[in-house]
Image 1 (cartoon, rainbow, N blue to C red):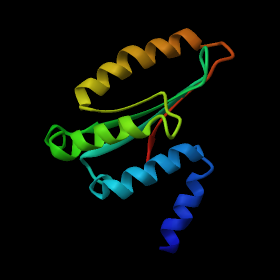
Image 2 (tube, rainbow, N blue to C red; image 1 turned 45 degrees about the vertical axis):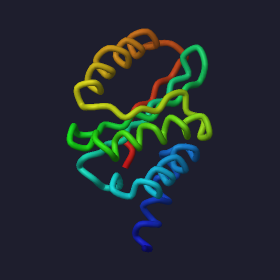
Image 3 (cartoon, helix red, strand yellow; image 1 turned 45 degrees about the horizontal axis):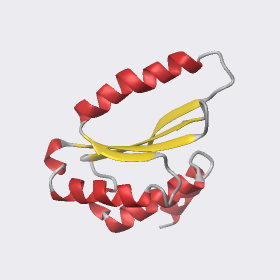
Length: 123
């Protein structure tokens, strides 16, 4: 327990509070998603035009059945509560399309400007 607390405390420096709270709620309601190879969580922040935060969850196709569908429905209800612009569960193929098109396009637009984008996997 002490090691977990230390790791979680260290992540306070990296993750916004609303993201940590959102992840805690997901893991509390869906414990099978924590430390699972079937689910990967990504956070995207951009302040281009206005601040926006996104939670993207990749689920393996086999995980998109019951738990994946319920998780998607839940995060759609919770996203506004936690202040996210969008939250979505998607397959790896859908995720690759989002990365290759939308995020790459955004980075090309804001490169060299005062705007910021931050994108990373949440552990």
